[in-house]
Image (cartoon, rainbow, N blue to C red; front, side, top):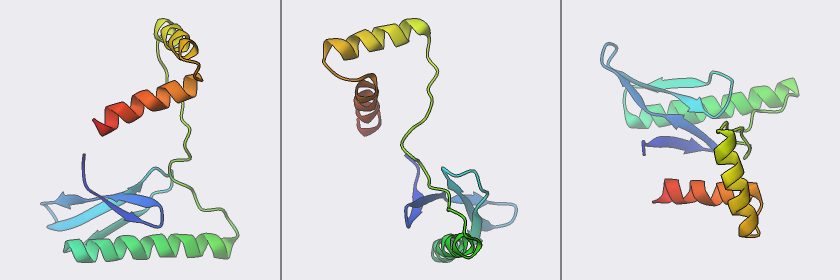
Length: 111
């Protein structure tokens, strides 16, 4: 898994541009384009945190709700056959479909 910057519930990428000799990144999990850059990891992290603080302050001043990364729900498209098999599996275990999918995803990403 890649390294990410983390601050106030937001995650950002760490990327390098050889052409510009600069580190840069963007916040993931939101629709807004929130980007930052720096010449070192320390300056990249500082610009990331400043950008998040500025974003939250601007939202507060404008009276708008800041985007929340990863609300905890998303749509997944699978074949009808897999959907049926999964639903039957969940029912046989006395679980909801959501609980079964969450359990499977946890196993996948923590293995």
